[in-house]
Length: 282
DNA sequence: TGCCAGGCTTCAC
DNA sequence: GTGAAGCATGGC
Image (cartoon, rainbow, N blue to C red; front, top):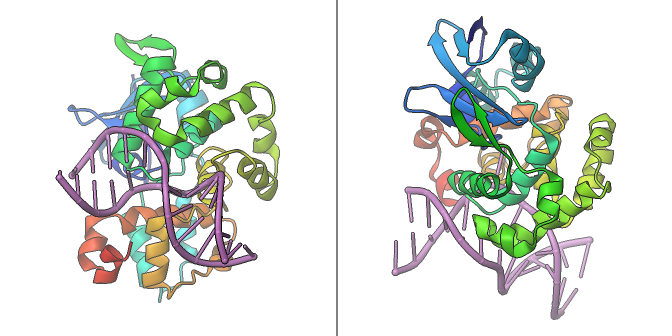
């Protein structure tokens, strides 16, 4: 158990930001995270102090990297023109946001599953997948399941996968697993590749289009210029920017800008103040 | 009970 | 190349 001081860091904002699906709030107020086969409980103690249920060594090697704590997100606010009231408010609202450095394989499967599903339904499906096919683990008396590897999924049939509430996405996940297990999808290479090369490779997979590819690029490969455009982002661009968002202005930072937009756009604070067409125009 | 969800593939045209 | 239809299932 260790305590660290971290500025501009919010567990609740990260957990509710739709980029990760195995970070959940416990009754104690702490957050449980399962990633890279590890189990972590972390709690906001106030005044910028956070408790982590791991050793100093594990924090250094895994979690400080996972939470992207070495990036200064404050700099990004200086890019926003003062007349952009929406982004100014969005950054103020989500100033504890981080773009996590998640496992690329888990991110790929998670965002394949995410299409046409609500966030609670995505979490359920992923948890089903882990419980049925992931390796059972234990940490300080806590039982949990690691995310199943490509090899573990590749040997299943689509019926087994479908029973995890994946619906029609079962065949997409099966195809990705077979590709990754067979060496046709190399995440080490994608991490090294430039954004466009990685995007083209991801979109060549069955069931991965523009939006899912951009989510994998941003949340799994940490390509910070990826800009996933989902229903929420499209609604915001239509309502706040007349249908055209000035992406060029934020080259290199589009990913975090998108995340501020997404998190603020889904918030009650914004929806209460938003024009009606934001809510009704689906 | 019915609608909707961090979209994608397929198939007309 | 573009647009519409169809898709499985959970959550609210």
